Length: 462
Image 1 (tube, rainbow, N blue to C red):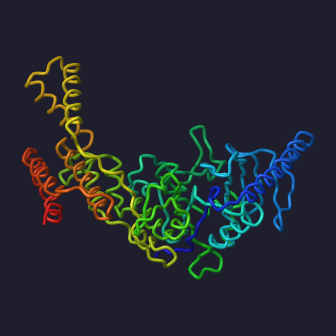
Image 2 (image 1 turned 90 degrees about the vertical axis):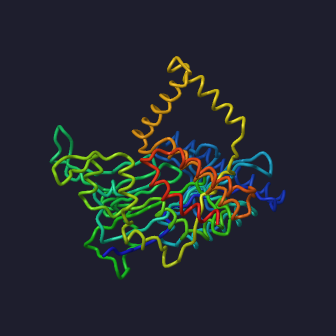
Image 3 (image 1 turned 90 degrees about the horizontal axis):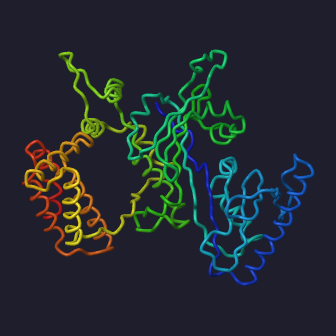
């Protein structure tokens, strides 16, 4: 049985902006504060040059103790830090600035010790009392994490994870240097990553990480010990989602509030977590099926091999169920979740200019490639293109056009449902387009496409 030991915010990064409520005196006080920190930074730089092992100067700010660092980070003038947070400051030239003037990074141990709500309260109180009296906050990065026991991930699980992410990799650790050979050292699987910097999922062996990095041991003390379902004899695996602002601001919650807003993000943590586990799905495939996908072929009962196309592999994942524990894990600390939507760009209408440009491009490209624009060449071009599309993507050009049409109409459905725009008679247009596409679709695809579209047509035209 899979047990959830902890669900928590593991990383937080804030950007503070000047607010319209900031007075001239408040702004000048901020500039004086930064000048004071810059003066201490110069002392730290002098000390570093004179005594190579000294890279910071101590500073007491109210009851809080910090180190003023001799170096800074890109775009900011000075950085102060302690065991709980690091804060970077910038000196803006005007009171209203389009870019952030303060950057705060919360330490994972601080968040684990205090909890993210209390940690935020402490930091915001410090900023308001000692640095900037009025501000706006944007969350530049947040990591949500769940620690589990009872399921041990393996190399095969890397191929059970389904997502749209194009970047993915596994992680391994050396476990016995004495057995290293000229061909490589003995390694142990420790996890995998799916996705890029703005939005990615990591699954990794937290027990191994703590053994390798003792400073990470606070997780056991602060997050696991004392939990009735924690078993010290079992391995703890961490499932962690990283979301940066570029991804956050493309989302809206069930109330149509943008997740570019600081409080909206914090209020939607359970929903963000659930969305991530929906976007990155852990599929319950047996080992034989996973090996078939890896090999790209399936051995039939008569002993012959049947090669799997991309379309066939997609069908395997479509028929599979998500692991039950993955579904249960979507509930964040007993808080139910609501839908989070990826906000659509406004659908663009087709126009005669687009059609005209496409035709001109087609004529030009065909002439260059085939040396002819005859009727026979047109037929050959479409046949060649269709064959290549089937080989590369597993479906025909016509099926691809239907998929794009579906996406376009779903965007209009979403926007109209939420009062964003109104497109008169688009459902009639949708019905006519689908019927036209079905009329010209090859028999090989007709039955499947008809079944896929029938329900959508009934829903939208009725």
